[in-house]
Length: 263
Image (cartoon, rainbow, N blue to C red; front, side, top):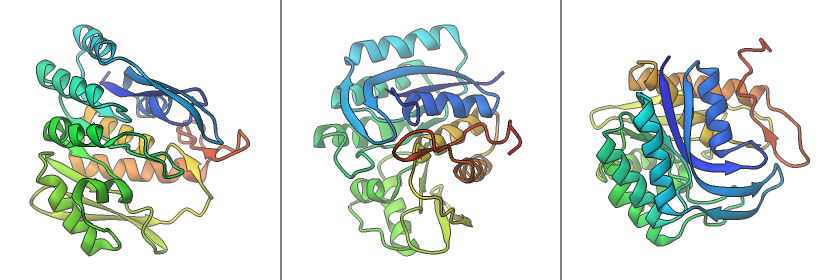
């Protein structure tokens, strides 16, 4: 069975972070492992506390997994401090971990910063050059590129600038752009690919970014080419949104097992 590694925070509500990653891996029949970067007190209403772990224990978790498993792909989520970003980048380099999918989480859904300027700088310098693909949403793409993204033309310019930071490919998720369809833009340094799907009007739901990047990593772990992995991830998230779970008092959660239960 293919094996993937998620490097992300825990979430006590289970809608984001490692919990969403592991559910997604399982839905793709990929064996999931993890290295936790922070402990979050979070539910469907929001985050009330976030405690980053020490960089050394993050490194030790990655090393422990890599010593015992043949890792076929990696995805990273929120890396809350510059020290953690640097540690993860160094571990990826030293252990020669393949197909690194970077979800560059920088802020909470309420728009508050989740990492500081030093961590953003470390992300650009230490992690993006080791990434196979980076999957920013519109605000993250703007921070990484310095381009104000309002349409597909400006998204293309942002993707070019982000690619210059070192990843092999960029996917700018278009969910925050206006339109009846959601168009994600994939750039591999040679061509742009527009991946479109009807917009799912289901209100706000937690875990879309985590689930998308984990699904891309799962597809790569299963041997798919990048474009097929991204297309499969987009279709998977669309289905999970259509079968969202109103289990709490705040945002809905994605149903990563919508295909297994046949709904």
